[in-house]
Length: 400
Image (cartoon, rainbow, N blue to C red; front, top):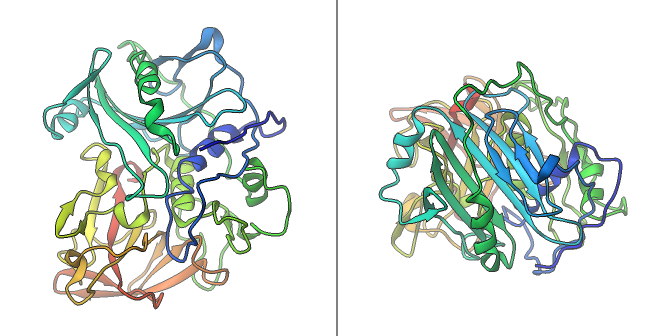
């Protein structure tokens, strides 16, 4: 993938968010049109380089040594969870180099890492796993490394069409990771990025014409279907209608942007249908959310598909899969569609309310019927897409 990133001033907090979007927008979701491998030009500002090309994280105090000309921006999350943070590393202008690094810190992290099995590789001094994704899992490949450094569970990704060619450079950067000293104490409050506007996101990607990408909802919007009223705070919901390549404002873009802004959570790679466990050609595959440490998330099947472990809650990700035989459920296997994901922003006795992108320009806030069953809870899909089922919902424990 060739992406030009010219220098541009005036988006002081936007570098990290644009970088996160770079690795999410190609994931794909419902009603998305196939795109070419040529990405749009990305225009963004250059964040202030850290002194001596060493990044010192303000949340957990770990250090990374960066290549010359690289830049970093920290995402502590607007609610500043005590257990995790996100940092984005962006290469010099006129490169497509972007790395997202999610760090989960705590005494339980060695156990969570060990639950993955025996690590087959080392990155520098650290045991590690490779969890790369390919084109069959999303529209863009990702080199994914999961490593343990003391009490830090590190989930790092480099996503691009040519990601595999950067694997060695990627690991050299990760090998410089140094956990914090025991006496490190984070500041009481940390600056977190504000929710970005659709126009700012579109412009940061080099789309200067205002003929598409309009704002469907602001971060404070409400509607007859709930809007953002049932959640801590919202995000901009943007239209993909009229996009020249359907690159931006996919369903996955909204949920990853929201979780980065609000909770400092790492990007989940791949298409929406593969966030949750899925069957393909008779083989069970773990969802990509399982790259996160055990204990940082919980999965609940829709009751019509299995046993609901817990009720849906505001902030959960609602996963839709398009399967070969809905009567047999999710075990019948995924079809070609990348599925869909929406963000639950409210729940009452008979409905879940969701926010979503790349669905249509009228139902970006939508109410879905919630039914109590013998197994727990069932949610009904309203899309009319052939083969679509509600697979379940993902709750991040950092949200409480």
